[in-house]
Length: 139
Image (cartoon, one colour):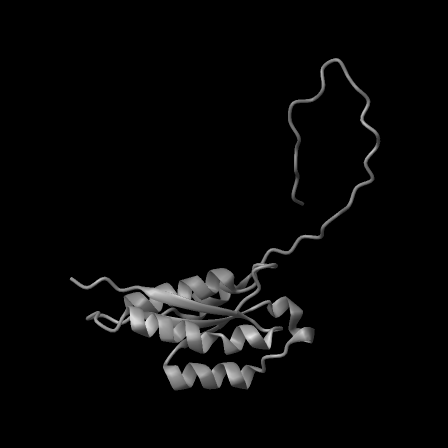
């Protein structure tokens, strides 16, 4: 019985140094697994796609690194949640040898986006019985 597992190498698409550090991280992964019968699935994850306009690591550089090292390729935004669930779903499916269909992948890409509203806060008067809870509503 062999345990299958995955390793995510995550870098910031707006920070070239974080991408350049991947070689060291991958060497550490290889060294840690050199005596193992089963090698991990390694995924390269470019984070901060919400900052595409600030990208310094080009997509072709990302893809070339994936091809050279046989990594799966992913782009996500931890801030907005964009493609995060899909990334984990695809990696889990790859580890288990399951092929996701197009509908499953499209469903996983959906992100619920909400505006952040700054309400003007009135000074709180000291009440005898202050409220003990708050309520949040999503519309």
